Amino acid sequence: MSEFKIRFRGIRGSYPVANEKFLKYGGNTACVEINIDGRIIILDSGTGLISLGDELMQNYINSGTTLSNRTPVNVSILLSHIHQDHISGIPFFAPLHVASTRVNLFGNPTNNSTLEDEISESLFNKTFPLNSSDISADVVCYDINETNIIIIKKDNTAILTNICELSNIKHNDEDIIISCYKSYAHPKHGVMIYRIEYKGKSLVYATDKESYIGGDVKLAKFARNCNCLIHDSQYTTEDYQSIYSPKQGFGHSTFEMARDVKKQTNAEKLVFYHYDPSYDDDKLDQIAEDIAEENLIFAKEGLEIIL
Ligand SMILES: [Zn+2]
Ligand SMILES: [Zn+2]
Image (cartoon, rainbow, N blue to C red; front, side, top):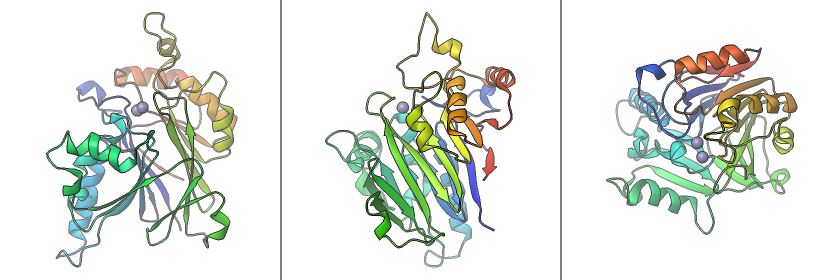
């Protein structure tokens, strides 16, 4: 039987927190691991990526006794955007420093740049002991836009195509199909929303996106009838509307906005995600109690959902 497993590695927005009051939900920034019949797709690469890297590294070491007979790490990473809380785990992703590793890195570069240049400059050349050219792994960066479709084949090879050419590509039901669209409801350069489909199951990842009261028609269309919607829920409505420090225009949603999108899309499950780093376990427990409803799930580090 096929498996579509989601595991939350980092659920925090903005910056990581390390404090005893944050142990229940976790303090690492955005990273979700998807394991589809052994193929690993990673949504964002905040500090949550580091524990996944350590686990993959251990599996790699245990898979054989020599460099030549071990099974290399081979993953695809989909970046929503390149704000720090979505990329800062990359330099510390242990398999990156092993020559046999293959990483397919997908993202939408900002104006007049490439994803490779942006990652190299912001994470390595100026801010890390290693230059990007010193990285051992085979990292292939793909600049994507909303016309693109990504296909992950059974042998883990990634094919980048677009909506018009999709019908010309031979594919079968073992393929994982990933579509995307760009939302501009996040400063400064917008954010990519992803939909991952496999054998009739689907997951939509919509983080760092400000929604509207009542929902979001474009997202609702894109996410229609998905099995699981992971949606930005950075603020309570009270904090969003605070007269002292209003959050409108910050590019994040409230728990209620996320719930409205779920209703509008007819999503089976909604996972609240990307909490404000000031929201400790007590505050999140209180929000969860107030909003309790079937199929509303609060992301926590280590939480697994099987579709
Ligand atoms: Zn973020
Ligand atoms: Zn952001």
